[in-house]
Length: 404
Image (cartoon, rainbow, N blue to C red):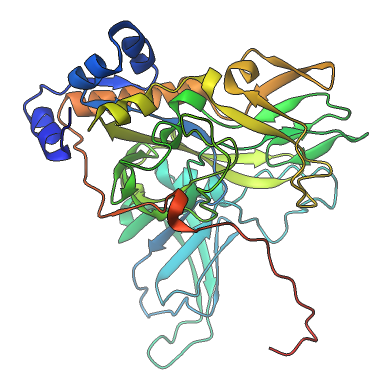
């Protein structure tokens, strides 16, 4: 049995495509078997909603009168610094950017109440954002100072560009030390007082296509409440990791670089987020529709939380010191019970990723496809796979005295 994306898109156009979520396909395949389910189902929708630090947005604000060259100068959006090194009227703001006067962790743990992720959320919500910029002035761009309000509806371009999203599995964070620690996976209490994780598990896009058979460069996706695309593999994309017999990665593996029109998006699915003692980020909603091209592809989408395992890592010692040690391996089914057994101790668990919101994304994508509002795209190139030779290397530190 085989189908093509063109054939599935034709069924979508005719309103005849059978679309189910990654949660629904599990029960369907159990009842009917993988072969029968693959014949009946055309698309399986996935979703994830969680903090994704490697996110940002770029804008073209339009030329002021007289003109000002932002490139090489400084610019702030609601007091948060934006990168100006692109050109005269282009800016980039990252989710982690902080105001210059933020105390950060000087008063520990820092609250990080406002940063780049919050600016992006406010822009998407249609709020006015204050732009302050200074420049050195040139003959063709004589202006040296600009103070104004900008609004997303007035910008020439507003584009979400996230260089690492929708991680394919991730660490489970624990703290085996004697003091509370503050991390990007939340607050971790001393002596294994709690455990945090961040994945939609059986709903997560890349866990439903573990070998990137259908998701590649050019794949159309749900991004931030609008439509986006896979632009490249995400930074730190690392397919060559230990996997289960069904191919599910047991460590941090693949990632997606995503791009989309910010003007289409919604503050419900792009949320500025403060991480106590760590910094600011952006919580992002991502959904991918997986075309069921074969029984093999359908089989991957039947993965359950009980079949997805991740490593419990000590974020007080192993993680900060780049050690490979793990405390244990646990399944997402275990994590979602709210407690696991670790080193003979019952430890409470919590997720930074929202499963209900991930399910809402999968159902929204299902509705878009069923109503003919969203068609699938054929990737123009695959993501690097297990045999690609891509690995994530640590920084090679060299003394600054060493000649270049």
